[in-house]
Length: 436
Image 1 (tube, rainbow, N blue to C red):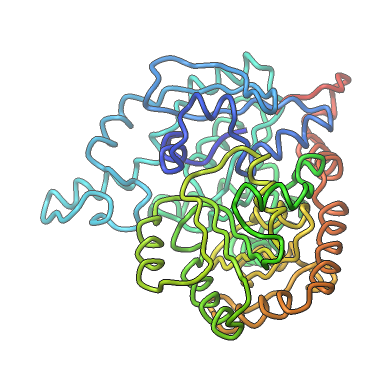
Image 2 (tube, rainbow, N blue to C red):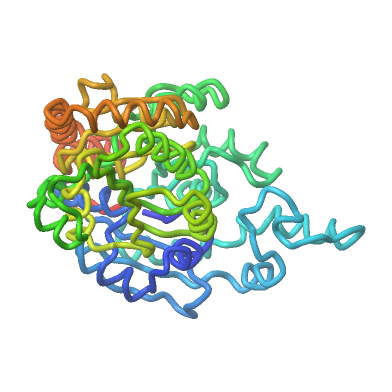
């Protein structure tokens, strides 16, 4: 399994998580849900990532899941490019390197175009794949240069290559436009839980249905379940009589926290005199922007835990302290955060971003209310309906937990992943313990 960022530190640094903390404690993101689910289906997973902070392959065991992690050093040529192109994920040359003109702009534009294709050390990756005896390659995302590189590598090594959809639906390089249709046709299959994304891929790339699997992101339901509400509220200093709305995740502009704050202002204004609390858990690139919003709006009842919380027990206590979960994102792939809240028995109010309707398929029957993206008034109305009717909120929470049990368990998802990913590579094998 390969991580999608050029460098693992691009992901971890934004969260304030060190490589040691990643090894010993980190459980966030889709990847470890996949690892847990595949382990239950008797598939051993090796997680590969790339770093500019190692000079030789670094191998360790991820403590929470027991998965093997191999950190590969990035090629020297990518290091050289990265010294000039500080933000290779940018969609313009100016955002990538600053204001440049003339010949210099052409030079930097060329480097930005090829940067993503230089980040993966293919020879080292091939050696490690052989060493681990891997039967298949699974990439995070197919709209990514690393996927293209892995499809080529898979062809050379005789390994099927698969990819998941976790929100990456943009191309950042002109090279991708002619290359991507070829690699998508050459890959073994795509795992896409989001039905709107499935329709996009079918229409744009004409991928046959046999190569597409609708498999949800899994979570460990023995870990994600409600705890004593009193414990969580006592830790936060919130009285049991208060009504609490919870959000957790990375503080990024597309997460729609501005919409949530405007909705919260309206909820509180229409219910003056009631003890209402909004609990925000997490930090990220746009934490300063959120801080400015909070300072300007002076909203009542807001408690922000401004740090990345990667301890599942702590997150679970915070979720269990709530009455409603808010998910106002503008853009998603297939988010795990609302599923965690549902597993903890919380009803969900969510913006209808891509992937969210798949989680709350059936709306109220699945334990949630969907509202238009960016519509603060509709979001406030939905929150208010649940806050004003405690019994109905509990009923929705019970439905949400049942939805999580039926569709997002490790056992159910693990069996689907094994059947799809290993259907080709295990056809000639008798060993039941496969490796991805």
